[in-house]
Image (cartoon, rainbow, N blue to C red; front, side):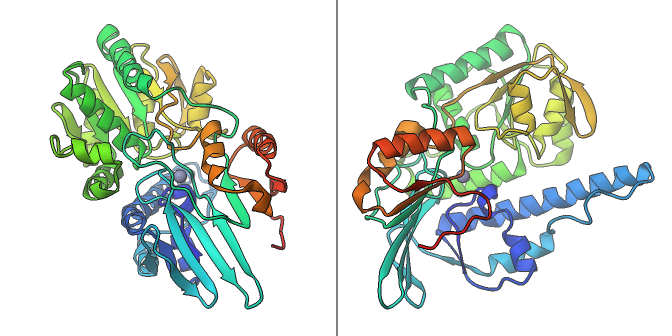
Length: 412
Ligand SMILES: [Zn+2]
């Protein structure tokens, strides 16, 4: 069986491939994760097919064979994979195999995200294994705090931001507004915000909606140019009962939390291309967040050479991605096989992270008695974060803290 923590593509993206290669067991997730996967995996298949076709065309033109033998998977592989999904709500204990019980708790990371808790009973002993999935923030705008969980014997914990703290939240709205004013008002340019379609885009829209309600948002058009983000926003809106209580309260006054005057949701590719010809200041929110895939590449291709424009990175960009190259100050980048000069300003805002920071990861594990945790594995982080978090948690009394190498095996 497969137990999925949340819908983000770095966790769910290979499911259609797995099924195409013969996997036929149940795939467990929360209901919201399943709904998000339905749209995300179709989108991912589309990107796979599109990128492959693009590379193949280009290779053919140059008389070469394409680098890849084919897309990782296609649209046709998605529906059979979705049929294998089974859902469990937060807190619901389900037997997923003889002797194995699964319970999800809310991880507060994106809609439907969960930490995975397994009780594995082999007839002699019971092993309690917990996997954090990706841990959200205690100060998320929309989602509740990551939920505490029962004492575990073995924990696998993420560590994306294990080495740093995020800026305080109260400043985020102001900071976003400053970037909008600097680029769109002072320089008359276009502010490109690369954002993951799920989570980040809705937080941005929610914040812009709040600024708009307060009459503080400059009157510039806001384009949400990602069909996936549009579908995701509709799903997020449907699951309003999973928001934090203050937001649910707010929805009674403003039920459309992601809609305000000036927003245009762009679905068609033609309209997306048309955006490049608009000469007026505007905000473009487009995926993907690390700038490696999706429509945002076209916006960057056209937008980066103009010094009036600005790029605002609102999330983690893994080393080696276009996003990280821009943040490191690259003067020229490679986009869709073109060399593009970088004259637009490139800035970064930390708040819109969906990941817990150093202090929050430690807080997340506070529900555990460290003396009772036999092993703690740290994953999902670059080496600096892994090492810093390990040191921190050893200081908190966790004894066996390991950073597994790829391919390493452990007997529990
Ligand atoms: Zn994630």
